[in-house]
Structure formats: structure tokens, C-alpha cells
Image (cartoon, rainbow, N blue to C red):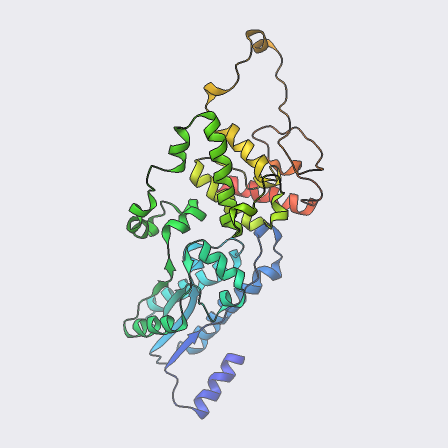
Length: 355
């Protein structure tokens, strides 16, 4: 009704309407396991209903352009923004549908802006995106890009300043995606560090060297995720006291999977709750089989004994955790309440299904 009223006012009081720009957006970051129906619709409604209402109200008009402001998240995804990503993907699809119907349309998947927009409203959001390889555009750059695309329209376009090397480091699941292949190829040479990858260097080191290398590498990755100087990452400090939240823990897990070549649980940091504990676990997981202590021959006939629990935060109750068991149960009540534990367990189960 509001759109129809606005169009009626334009028709009565202004020159003929020649174009539409839909730029509405709203964020409500949540993981799927922590999302209510209203929170699902909060970021989707301005995109889905707003875009559709403008389309329905103007499709009979002879427009020169119909521009939908989508987001780069519809192309790359964004942790904690599943509903926002879906809403923007709807706009991309709406543009394709309009073009198929012979109507003008263009969906622009914008990256973040430095002075305006949703990313600029929260400094830490822009900083986190920059840390993952996505730098902000200035409003002047955005205006130039928009003018160029209005002069040479297309159904959709991604407008972002991105380092694919950094993005893949933070999102290793994106490696090898066909629609990102050309961008990856452009940075293939810069992605191969001198002296080989960390996993290659680790494989050629002695056991003593590996232990120190893993801890140093872990501290480096933690400092990148938290944007702290490595000297401030203490070996025995709980991750939560360092400022690690659930989304950051997933980013750290992704980085470690990419650099170490391991599959790690989504809830890993809630079992191995400090850099030191996690480094010890990774060292054991990466130790060649031939380096494991050999049991006496008689021990081979002994009954199998359940492994001890993985290290947990100070004050946590001990629990036996087999290697294939989800590590949620070993976190302390001070670090992770029952609701968070259940959410992480569901997340880990969903992730295993998707893999």
C-alpha cells in the first residue's frame, strides 16, 4: 500500500518515473541454531518483500532501469548472516526473472563501503571483513562503478575489492568453487609461499621442532582472528577470555583446517579451551604413527582402555572423550552453558551432514 501510494504521488505531482533503485537493508546476525522465525525474517523482509513490491507495482511502467542493491554475501556467503545472504540471493534471482520477462533489471552485489552502509555502522564488522580479505570501497568509487554499469547494464555484477588468498585462508571450503576459479587463478602465484606450505614445512621437521612450530602457528592464527599482537596471546589463557566468540572460533577452525590439512570439529575450541591445550591436541593429531610410543607385546593383548578426556578449561569436570566424539561435553560451565553446548552440537551435526 505504501509503494502504491508513493507511485500515485509521483504520477500526480512529478515527471514520469523512469527508474527505480532498491537499496533497503537490515542486519540481524545469528547462527542458524540461534535463530527464531522473526529473526529469520528481520533481514530478509526488506530484501524479499521490498524488492517484490517494487517489481509488482512498476512492471507495467516503461522504466529505463530497475536497480537492486544486493550484497557480495549472496556470492561469497557470510558466517552468521544466512538470512541476509538469502534475501540478497532473492534480489539476484528477481533481476534474472525480470530480464527473462523483457523488463529492465540489474542486481548489484556490493562489497562494504568505508563511510556509509551497514558495514560502516559497526567498525568491528568492517575490520573483520578487511581481515578476511575484503576491503571497503569509498562512496566515490561506488558512484563511478554505478555510473559505468548504468551505461552498460547487465543482469548482475559483483562489486568488491577482495584478496582471494586471504578469503580462502578464512573460508577454505570455498577453495575450488567453479565460479571463483578465475579469481583464484589470478592469485595462484601469491598463494604459494616461499619454502612451501606450512604443512610441507611441518612434515619435514623433527618432533621437537613440530611441537614448537605448531604452537607458534596456532598463536599466529589466533592473533589474526582476534586482531591482537601475538605477544598478547597467552598459552594458558582460555579462548573466551581472549575475546573469542563462536563465529571467530569457526574462522580459526577454518584457518587451521586449511593450513594443517585436518578436518576439525566446529566445537573444537570448547574442548581444547586454550592455545596450549589446542596446540598439544594438534601436535598429537599430526604426529606420524611411527613416532607414537610402542607398547610392549603383552600390552597388545590387554583390554582396550578408554582414552582420557581432552584438556578443558580450568575448573572443568573431566570426561572421557573418544577421538570421534563431539567435544562439546568437556567444556566447563563457566565457558559454555547448556544452551550454547546444544547449539554447537547441532551446528557440528549439521556441518558433518553438509560435508
